[in-house]
Image (cartoon, rainbow, N blue to C red):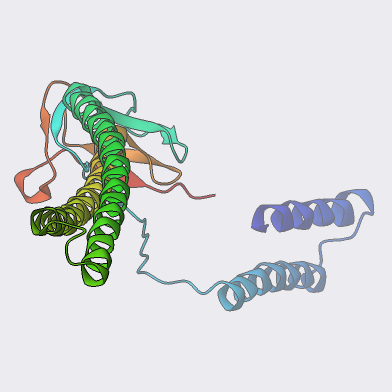
Amino acid sequence: MIAFIVISYVAAAYLAFSVFRLKPRPWSIAAFAALGIALIGGVIVFWTLAAPISKRAVVSRYAVQLVPWVKGKVRNIPAKPNVPLKKGDMLFQIDPAPYQYGVNQAEAQLRSAKSNVQALEASVQFAHAAVNKAEADLDAAKFAYEADVKILRSNAGAVSELKVSQDKAEHLAAQAGLVQATASLNQSNMALEAGKHAVVSAQAQLDTAQFNLSQCSVTSPADGFVTAWEIREGSMAIRLPRLRSARSSIRPRRS
Protein backbone atom coordinates (compact mmCIF):
# COMPACT_ATOMS: atom_id res chain seq x y z
CA MET A 1 0.00 0.00 0.00
CA ILE A 2 2.75 2.41 0.95
CA ALA A 3 4.71 1.44 -2.17
CA PHE A 4 1.68 2.20 -4.34
CA ILE A 5 1.22 5.61 -2.67
CA VAL A 6 4.92 6.43 -3.10
CA ILE A 7 4.85 5.43 -6.78
CA SER A 8 1.69 7.47 -7.33
CA TYR A 9 3.23 10.43 -5.49
CA VAL A 10 6.45 10.28 -7.56
CA ALA A 11 4.42 9.96 -10.79
CA ALA A 12 2.30 12.99 -9.82
CA ALA A 13 5.43 15.02 -9.04
CA TYR A 14 6.99 14.00 -12.35
CA LEU A 15 3.89 14.97 -14.31
CA ALA A 16 3.60 18.28 -12.48
CA PHE A 17 7.21 19.40 -12.86
CA SER A 18 8.24 17.70 -16.11
CA VAL A 19 5.14 17.29 -18.25
CA PHE A 20 3.07 20.28 -17.17
CA ARG A 21 6.19 22.43 -16.66
CA LEU A 22 5.32 23.56 -13.15
CA LYS A 23 8.09 25.79 -11.92
CA PRO A 24 9.80 24.52 -8.75
CA ARG A 25 8.99 27.38 -6.47
CA PRO A 26 9.02 27.25 -2.66
CA TRP A 27 5.26 27.07 -2.36
CA SER A 28 4.93 24.26 -4.94
CA ILE A 29 7.75 22.23 -3.40
CA ALA A 30 6.25 22.74 0.07
CA ALA A 31 2.81 21.72 -1.19
CA PHE A 32 4.09 18.47 -2.72
CA ALA A 33 6.15 17.69 0.39
CA ALA A 34 3.12 18.29 2.63
CA LEU A 35 0.99 16.12 0.33
CA GLY A 36 3.50 13.23 0.55
CA ILE A 37 3.76 13.50 4.33
CA ALA A 38 -0.04 13.62 4.63
CA LEU A 39 -0.54 10.56 2.40
CA ILE A 40 2.09 8.37 4.06
CA GLY A 41 1.24 9.63 7.54
CA GLY A 42 -2.46 9.03 6.94
CA VAL A 43 -1.79 5.46 5.88
CA ILE A 44 0.38 4.83 8.97
CA VAL A 45 -2.23 6.34 11.28
CA PHE A 46 -4.98 4.28 9.64
CA TRP A 47 -2.97 1.07 10.01
CA THR A 48 -2.22 1.87 13.63
CA LEU A 49 -5.93 2.32 14.39
CA ALA A 50 -7.20 -0.53 12.23
CA ALA A 51 -4.48 -3.08 13.12
CA PRO A 52 -2.81 -2.29 16.46
CA ILE A 53 0.87 -3.14 16.67
CA SER A 54 2.31 -5.04 19.59
CA LYS A 55 5.84 -6.09 20.42
CA ARG A 56 4.51 -9.37 21.84
CA ALA A 57 3.06 -11.98 19.50
CA VAL A 58 1.82 -15.42 20.48
CA VAL A 59 1.22 -18.17 17.92
CA SER A 60 -0.74 -21.17 19.23
CA ARG A 61 -1.37 -24.52 17.63
CA TYR A 62 -3.28 -27.51 18.94
CA ALA A 63 -1.22 -30.65 19.36
CA VAL A 64 -2.74 -34.05 20.13
CA GLN A 65 -0.60 -36.75 21.71
CA LEU A 66 -1.66 -40.14 20.40
CA VAL A 67 -1.32 -43.27 22.52
CA PRO A 68 -2.31 -46.63 20.99
CA TRP A 69 -5.19 -48.52 22.59
CA VAL A 70 -3.37 -51.84 22.31
CA LYS A 71 0.26 -52.80 22.75
CA GLY A 72 2.50 -54.65 20.35
CA LYS A 73 5.39 -54.38 17.94
CA VAL A 74 5.20 -51.51 15.42
CA ARG A 75 5.12 -53.11 11.98
CA ASN A 76 5.11 -50.09 9.66
CA ILE A 77 4.78 -46.30 9.75
CA PRO A 78 3.12 -44.94 6.57
CA ALA A 79 2.93 -41.34 7.83
CA LYS A 80 5.84 -38.97 7.31
CA PRO A 81 6.90 -36.06 9.56
CA ASN A 82 5.54 -32.61 8.60
CA VAL A 83 3.53 -34.04 5.69
CA PRO A 84 -0.15 -32.95 5.66
CA LEU A 85 -2.60 -35.68 6.68
CA LYS A 86 -6.33 -36.07 6.36
CA LYS A 87 -8.61 -37.34 9.09
CA GLY A 88 -8.54 -41.14 9.04
CA ASP A 89 -5.14 -41.48 7.35
CA MET A 90 -3.04 -44.25 8.87
CA LEU A 91 -0.20 -43.13 11.11
CA PHE A 92 1.31 -46.45 12.10
CA GLN A 93 0.29 -50.08 12.42
CA ILE A 94 0.89 -52.53 15.24
CA ASP A 95 1.41 -56.20 14.44
CA PRO A 96 -2.18 -57.56 14.41
CA ALA A 97 -1.30 -61.28 14.59
CA PRO A 98 -1.81 -61.76 18.39
CA TYR A 99 -5.14 -59.93 18.24
CA GLN A 100 -6.24 -61.94 15.20
CA TYR A 101 -5.58 -65.08 17.26
CA GLY A 102 -7.80 -63.62 19.98
CA VAL A 103 -10.57 -63.04 17.44
CA ASN A 104 -10.28 -66.61 16.18
CA GLN A 105 -10.46 -67.98 19.73
CA ALA A 106 -13.47 -65.80 20.59
CA GLU A 107 -15.26 -66.94 17.42
CA ALA A 108 -14.64 -70.58 18.37
CA GLN A 109 -15.96 -69.98 21.89
CA LEU A 110 -19.05 -68.31 20.47
CA ARG A 111 -19.72 -71.23 18.15
CA SER A 112 -19.27 -73.65 21.04
CA ALA A 113 -21.66 -71.63 23.23
CA LYS A 114 -24.30 -71.59 20.50
CA SER A 115 -23.97 -75.34 19.99
CA ASN A 116 -24.35 -75.84 23.72
CA VAL A 117 -27.56 -73.80 23.66
CA GLN A 118 -28.94 -76.00 20.91
CA ALA A 119 -28.15 -79.10 22.97
CA LEU A 120 -29.77 -77.55 26.05
CA GLU A 121 -32.88 -76.68 24.06
CA ALA A 122 -33.13 -80.32 23.03
CA SER A 123 -32.76 -81.29 26.71
CA VAL A 124 -35.60 -78.95 27.62
CA GLN A 125 -37.82 -80.52 24.97
CA PHE A 126 -36.94 -83.99 26.29
CA ALA A 127 -37.72 -82.83 29.85
CA HIS A 128 -41.09 -81.49 28.67
CA ALA A 129 -41.85 -84.87 27.12
CA ALA A 130 -40.84 -86.60 30.35
CA VAL A 131 -43.18 -84.34 32.34
CA ASN A 132 -46.04 -85.09 29.97
CA LYS A 133 -45.40 -88.84 30.29
CA ALA A 134 -45.19 -88.56 34.08
CA GLU A 135 -48.50 -86.67 34.16
CA ALA A 136 -50.11 -89.35 31.98
CA ASP A 137 -48.71 -92.13 34.20
CA LEU A 138 -49.99 -90.32 37.27
CA ASP A 139 -53.46 -89.94 35.78
CA ALA A 140 -53.54 -93.65 34.89
CA ALA A 141 -52.31 -94.74 38.34
CA LYS A 142 -54.74 -92.40 40.10
CA PHE A 143 -57.64 -93.66 38.02
CA ALA A 144 -56.75 -97.29 38.79
CA TYR A 145 -56.33 -96.65 42.50
CA GLU A 146 -59.55 -94.63 42.80
CA ALA A 147 -61.41 -97.33 40.88
CA ASP A 148 -60.16 -99.98 43.26
CA VAL A 149 -61.22 -97.87 46.24
CA LYS A 150 -64.74 -97.42 44.85
CA ILE A 151 -65.12 -101.11 44.08
CA LEU A 152 -63.80 -102.03 47.52
CA ARG A 153 -66.31 -99.73 49.19
CA SER A 154 -69.24 -101.17 47.23
CA ASN A 155 -68.14 -104.79 47.44
CA ALA A 156 -65.46 -105.68 49.96
CA GLY A 157 -64.59 -108.99 48.35
CA ALA A 158 -64.50 -107.84 44.71
CA VAL A 159 -60.92 -106.51 44.85
CA SER A 160 -58.10 -107.99 46.86
CA GLU A 161 -56.29 -105.81 49.33
CA LEU A 162 -53.01 -106.73 47.63
CA LYS A 163 -54.13 -105.21 44.32
CA VAL A 164 -55.32 -102.08 46.11
CA SER A 165 -51.95 -101.77 47.81
CA GLN A 166 -50.14 -102.24 44.49
CA ASP A 167 -52.27 -99.61 42.77
CA LYS A 168 -51.68 -97.25 45.68
CA ALA A 169 -47.93 -97.80 45.46
CA GLU A 170 -48.00 -97.20 41.71
CA HIS A 171 -49.97 -94.01 42.33
CA LEU A 172 -47.41 -92.78 44.83
CA ALA A 173 -44.57 -93.75 42.47
CA ALA A 174 -46.26 -91.84 39.64
CA GLN A 175 -46.50 -88.77 41.87
CA ALA A 176 -42.80 -89.05 42.71
CA GLY A 177 -42.01 -89.54 39.02
CA LEU A 178 -43.90 -86.35 38.15
CA VAL A 179 -42.03 -84.42 40.84
CA GLN A 180 -38.73 -85.74 39.54
CA ALA A 181 -39.63 -84.94 35.91
CA THR A 182 -40.71 -81.44 36.88
CA ALA A 183 -37.43 -80.89 38.77
CA SER A 184 -35.49 -82.11 35.72
CA LEU A 185 -37.44 -79.70 33.53
CA ASN A 186 -36.66 -76.80 35.86
CA GLN A 187 -33.01 -77.77 35.91
CA SER A 188 -32.94 -77.95 32.12
CA ASN A 189 -34.55 -74.51 31.87
CA MET A 190 -31.96 -73.03 34.25
CA ALA A 191 -29.15 -74.66 32.28
CA LEU A 192 -30.62 -73.23 29.07
CA GLU A 193 -30.72 -69.73 30.58
CA ALA A 194 -27.09 -70.11 31.70
CA GLY A 195 -26.19 -71.27 28.19
CA LYS A 196 -27.86 -68.21 26.68
CA HIS A 197 -25.91 -65.96 29.07
CA ALA A 198 -22.75 -67.77 27.99
CA VAL A 199 -23.57 -66.91 24.36
CA VAL A 200 -23.96 -63.24 25.29
CA SER A 201 -20.66 -63.32 27.17
CA ALA A 202 -18.91 -65.03 24.26
CA GLN A 203 -20.34 -62.44 21.86
CA ALA A 204 -19.02 -59.65 24.09
CA GLN A 205 -15.59 -61.27 24.15
CA LEU A 206 -15.66 -61.49 20.36
CA ASP A 207 -16.66 -57.83 20.06
CA THR A 208 -13.79 -56.87 22.38
CA ALA A 209 -11.32 -58.96 20.41
CA GLN A 210 -12.49 -57.43 17.11
CA PHE A 211 -12.22 -53.93 18.59
CA ASN A 212 -8.66 -54.62 19.77
CA LEU A 213 -7.80 -55.93 16.32
CA SER A 214 -9.16 -52.77 14.69
CA GLN A 215 -7.06 -50.63 17.06
CA CYS A 216 -3.86 -52.09 15.63
CA SER A 217 -4.14 -49.48 12.89
CA VAL A 218 -3.70 -46.03 14.46
CA THR A 219 -5.20 -43.27 12.30
CA SER A 220 -5.15 -39.50 12.40
CA PRO A 221 -8.00 -38.06 14.52
CA ALA A 222 -8.12 -34.82 12.50
CA ASP A 223 -6.58 -32.99 9.57
CA GLY A 224 -3.04 -31.98 10.45
CA PHE A 225 0.52 -33.19 10.30
CA VAL A 226 2.94 -35.12 12.45
CA THR A 227 5.43 -32.97 14.33
CA ALA A 228 7.28 -35.54 16.42
CA TRP A 229 7.66 -39.29 16.47
CA GLU A 230 8.59 -41.37 19.51
CA ILE A 231 8.36 -44.71 17.69
CA ARG A 232 10.34 -46.62 15.10
CA GLU A 233 9.54 -49.71 13.09
CA GLY A 234 10.19 -52.74 15.25
CA SER A 235 9.81 -50.85 18.53
CA MET A 236 7.26 -51.87 21.17
CA ALA A 237 4.17 -49.70 21.46
CA ILE A 238 2.42 -49.70 24.83
CA ARG A 239 -0.54 -47.84 26.34
CA LEU A 240 1.32 -45.99 29.11
CA PRO A 241 2.53 -42.54 27.91
CA ARG A 242 4.69 -42.02 30.99
CA LEU A 243 6.85 -44.92 29.82
CA ARG A 244 7.54 -43.24 26.47
CA SER A 245 4.98 -45.20 24.60
CA ALA A 246 4.29 -44.93 20.90
CA ARG A 247 3.04 -41.40 20.54
CA SER A 248 2.88 -38.91 17.72
CA SER A 249 1.92 -35.27 17.93
CA ILE A 250 -0.70 -34.26 15.41
CA ARG A 251 -1.00 -30.56 14.82
CA PRO A 252 -4.11 -29.38 12.93
CA ARG A 253 -3.41 -27.42 9.80
CA ARG A 254 -4.60 -23.87 9.48
CA SER A 255 -7.10 -23.30 6.73
